[in-house]
Image (cartoon, rainbow, N blue to C red; front, side):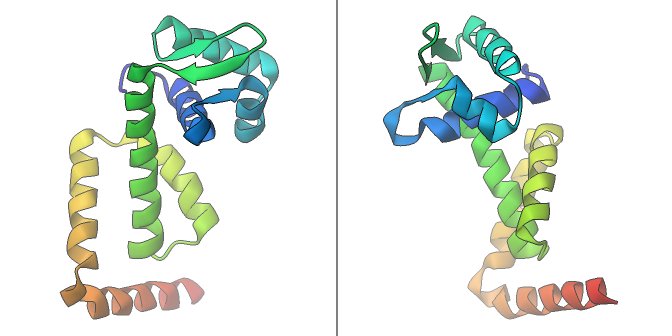
Length: 145
């Protein structure tokens, strides 16, 4: 969803995650998740609805359109890939990996993301498990110095 701003991508991802199995969420929950004000959430929801990504009833629930579901899944997938890479490959602590994944998911090109994913698959292969564990140990040891 490269035509959206970083901020709108964050809102769309939050709606996607919060919608879960129920298929809808509420603006207040989005605001709580992102730690932003109600007016900010309402403005973002209106902007995303105008782009055909969300459906919103005034004072009601927020639902993702089919196009919004696809875009939300893409954004959440980028975030998940990067967070997993940062924690399992680079041995970063979870909270730091979460923050950095949130920043990087907006900045990296689709090509860079494909290559990160390929590298993760390569490094996680059973034949390289000991090598990866050794590298993680070296990274953690170096961080304590």
